[in-house]
Image (cartoon, chains in turn orange, purple):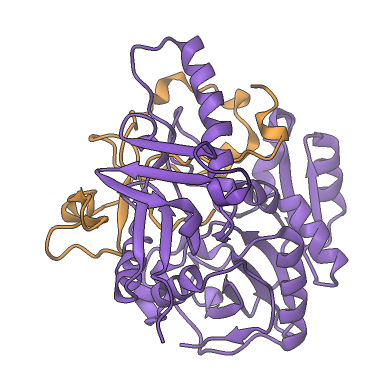
Length: 97
Length: 343
């Protein structure tokens, strides 16, 4: 399927915000081989409150995510873990794209 | 007088805090809500389209989605919100070759059945795939008379070198996508628009690795995030110049976002944005503008799947209601008279 990007895909698949993320192996980086964008990329660890990191579960009857009490359910205060259990990288759920 | 109960299909992953408030708003309207992720297919969800059993023509056609004991008639939908579904999840006994076949069949089959629904789509993913082409957006905006930053998109280091040599003002590097990947399958992140400095001189060769976008740095008074939901426009002023972390790219915000008072965008700009979105064929968009100290609006980009629920959280704008109203209106969407909503 080499032409996938050249056609209009009938469906668009997104990355899961909660699953399938493995830790990065920083030791394999060869700086000169990376696209220029990586020069300006910040790979920063953020202090994310423990209670705001993907806690809760999906309720298939209500069809909404159930957060523990006190965790914001919308907006910039919702954090999405993106890189496994030990890495601190998080993005705001409301990152633009 | 009451019409038929609205029926809305939400395509997204289980964890999507932007969708949850809309689910509640739809329920308040007594709408039937069918929220599914594409990962439910084929093992937890079935999809059927057939015209067997009828006497030909559309009257005998059935398009049915079944999930968790429920059955949804896709031809009764009033609206589809295509958010962020993840990929199909097939039987893990398949090898890569079989998976490729199964994916292709599913892409055309599921995509084709869903596409056959004759209702409002916010947004159709096939149209999104073109609408998110940033160079195309810039070309369209220019054609429609909206100012855009002067832009260089290239993988030629000599072009970049010449731009930096000849430019009379600062230049920014701005990715065409949402961020870099730090490992396969990662969520794109961590790449904000950046002012290019002397550091680039020893890294120019890296321009050859892929497309790179550079733009003139446009002086700002403030910025506007315009959220368009159907014919409703919600322009939010962001005081990006009041903080160092947001002055170049407000997504770099690390504290509470600083907002300006509500001010509708000029009617002339509304008309041009309507033409832009009509050309792109999309119902929803998050459109970003710089407003210069002279008050001129400069188009930065249009995000066909951009986020908005953070502004409901911080400013009390009822985006959940606006989205629910759009998805339950029924019929196809037509661009028309615009209503601007404040906060």
